[in-house]
Length: 352
Picture 1 (spheres, one colour):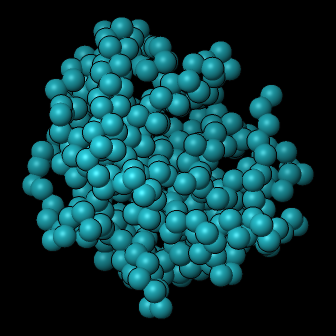
Picture 2 (cartoon, helix red, strand yellow):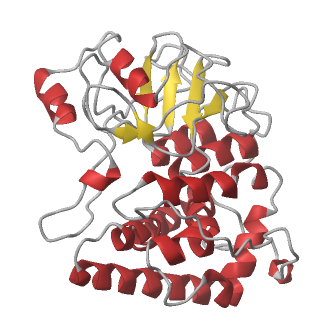
Picture 3 (cartoon, one colour):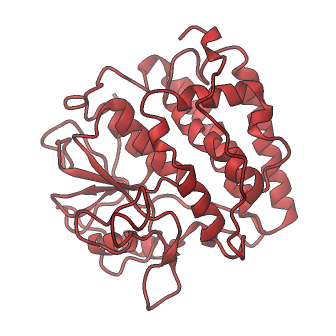
């Protein structure tokens, strides 16, 4: 049995934030662009809200149909992992979700912060919609509803409790674990287990090197402000991609011949690689479609029922190329390569 401990309790729950916890949150960076060390290296800070939904009806956050809402951006790889779980587990009727605009904008007139905002209407940005719960203009407003004077990062995914009007969790790796197991009493595809007991050690080990060197590795390349940290980060990215290519030459999925959590986590980066990371984050030593096994593997995952609906390449490209003026001053979006991930692949040669 795995126990999950809440790192932070929110003020409108029975367990209020301590002053030290509140100060910790308020000292945090407010966006990824702030998370660069003096040496020029990108250093991602931890998510702040780490409460856990449980099947136990007596828990602080019990798994109840209709109680929770997931805020996402189709541009964000971390958020799209969570959306993938909603689709794969059949939780769309139990947990509502909505998407924000892809391009960061000013979130308040009183400061210069730029972040996730909602469209004013359902037609302003295809795929995004106004906040369905409170009519909030920005994701920032929701954090400030949960904690007045909050000044940490205004992250998505954001898992929201409608009953307590507060943030449950904004750490994607924990949200997908909740969706995998804690809602099985109401999930339409409860039999699917993407974190099976017999593979957990292997999945955890795989997640660690893929996160450090690929998922987060591309950001360490893209947000580096000096040559040396970029050189080190890009070396690690390609060593890890080469390792994946070798593994996937022997088996269908990254942890064997069963689809697991590790595949969903890896996919969210791979699907963005040639369209964004190769150009925007300077990961151009070798493109994904030059890796036969990785490229066909990405198409294989994309074609799993429900997965393609988590990929909105228009949102992805508009976000990255237009949200960070310090990286792409004029907001020019490259025209290609417009890869067809619905094309045939060869992964059926492995048993599944």
